[in-house]
Length: 83
Image 1 (cartoon, rainbow, N blue to C red):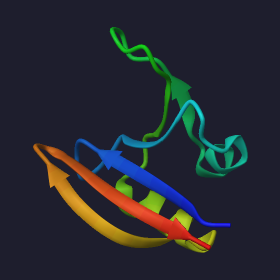
Image 2 (cartoon, helix red, strand yellow; image 1 turned 90 degrees about the vertical axis):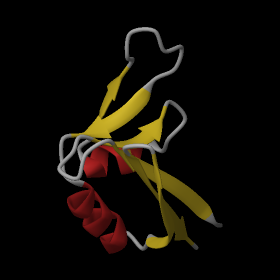
Image 3 (cartoon, one colour; image 1 turned 180 degrees about the horizontal axis):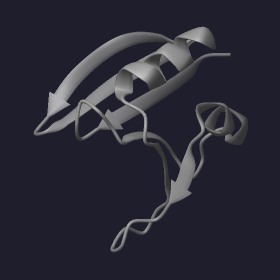
Image 4 (cartoon, helix red, strand yellow; image 1 turned 180 degrees about the vertical axis):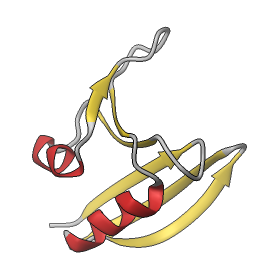
C-alpha cells in the first residue's frame, strides 16, 4: 500500500498543518495533531504547534520519506511517501 502525505507550514517554526478531515486518525494522534475548522473554511484540518522539522522527524520514524518540497508564497509544502 502506498501513502502520500503533505505537510504545510506558514512559518519555519510552526504551526504545521499535517492533514485534512479524511486523514488517518491514528497517525494524527501519533503526531499530537488537533482538528480545527478555520472561520470561513468549509473543511477541517489537523495541525500541530511543532516546527516542520519536528513533524518530519516523527514521520520519518514511521517510515515516511520526503519526495518533494516547494514554496507557495509564504507557505512551505512537503510531500512524503510511504510504502
